[in-house]
Image (cartoon, rainbow, N blue to C red):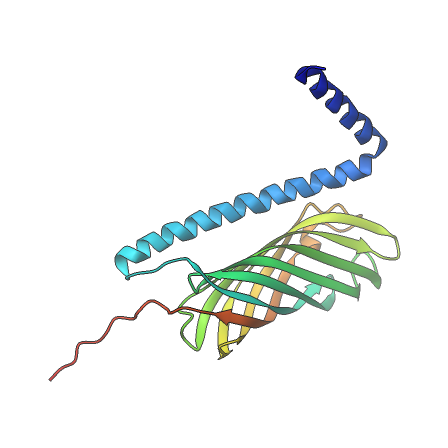
Length: 236
């Protein structure tokens, strides 16, 4: 059997499987699309950060982005869905580069009775897992600013109606991080959750999106030294 015949046979087999299991193929296509989004954004962010670091080497001194630490912890978020103040929790794990850039994975989960404008006291679930990117400025200081971005495919569900939907979440945040101990940092931040691709009856992307405040408990270790700070000239 030639290569061309094998290719045709594989293509026909895939079409038959897709026709037999349309829901599985639809789910796979959804995840492939979201993975492409995350990978593209991660590459753009990494290239931008590396470009910035090259500038910083010229203007402010030496700066490298080598592997410098491992961190993990939990996120505790106060937000709002419909007319209900809600609590989301989750965790994350990431690798630190250059004692400033964190690249890792996150998870968020919500399960509450939400009072929507269109739906009263509807048990509602939401969770998402994906990529997390964080960047700290002057991390050697006890209190320093930090920015963060979460990109994740997720799922929402109206429990009573047994309706589920796949969504995509983009969640930028900014705040401060407090170095309580070398192995434990406390983050306080605020941001906005952008939800896309929702098709729940009576609920659109805007209904699922919203502002939030967040506390982050961060555990781990960072090794190596920060770049040296300029010394002040002494006067006689």
